[in-house]
Image (cartoon, rainbow, N blue to C red):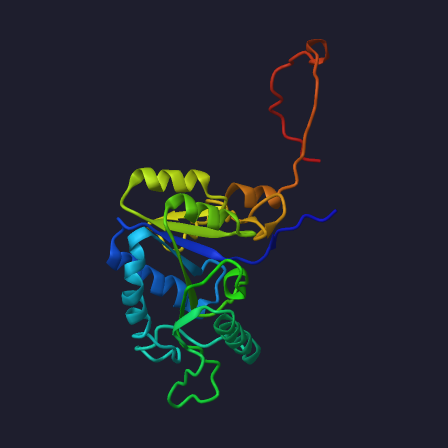
Length: 258
């Protein structure tokens, strides 16, 4: 009967509408997928290009190719290593699975090296296209600098794709259309939604609200729900009667020195 907050997996989608700002989209995708080497639960790992926005994938690949990992004191490094050799090997295995399952690897970071640090757990930025919902790189959380690109024809198709995911941690939509943004925020089955914000991590006074397979428990972390999680409620019920009130005799101003 212990209270529990269990944070589970994630597969966060960014939906890109064709009316979005292309420069903001490309920059946001690079940072949100490769930042921290992809090792954060709110990383964007699936880019859903709606309609004509798929024409931006080539420019996205070009921007991916310009970043690289490196040591903490390297000012040119975009991100660091994987947390362990085992983590690196898992990411490399997922990249290889993606190739074998038929996805197109536009940029492969499997053989990444960093000068002077040959034993580091380095994985270069990796970009897949022609990804389908049946592939392991789409279904599983890779937790590395790997982005999967999926193309759909409409916002409704994008919503169906995102809502069919077993995870519901975070998602975002990039658009200049208020109606599209409003439709997405109301119909998407994900707990944390960003509008033209790539990683919608809330400020601490709002709850960290992962849904579906991304969270197990009845009270989320952060905000009022986090306070309730750590609060034990006390209820006091009392009744008093006027007849029980003692007669007032005035204040006692004496000091007892004993």
